[in-house]
Length: 146
Image (tube, rainbow, N blue to C red; front, side, top):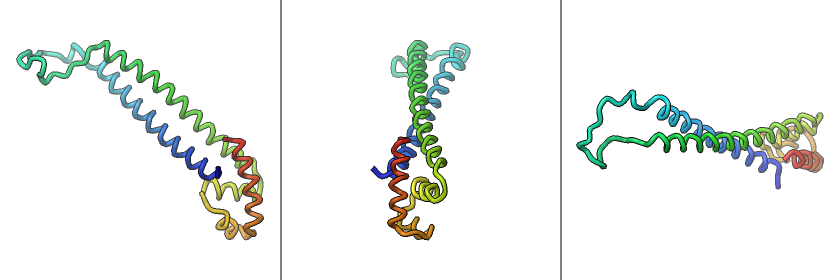
């Protein structure tokens, strides 16, 4: 598989994982507000005229607490997954930085900037064949990271 596709897929996975973590953190804050900031002190009167279909929205404390515990557990798992993906991305950058000279330039342009080999060859003033050889070395380095 092409290293650019792997890198781009990794960036998409990181974005998705950040979205999941953000959503769970928002839900956790909402539940904390429901559990710790609301409650009996806010209730001044209850209108029982509406019966079971009334407009009062009440969730039992034990249900809120159970949901809160589940969200906290899942949040820790999702944060761990995000951390692993970020570590892979950082490892890729470390591998790129270990390259020197032309290999570094080709790797950066190929993986980070997403340029194709013919454009890289034109920009750097080398033949496409020579850039392909360097690119194959870079792919090997990159695949070791992922």
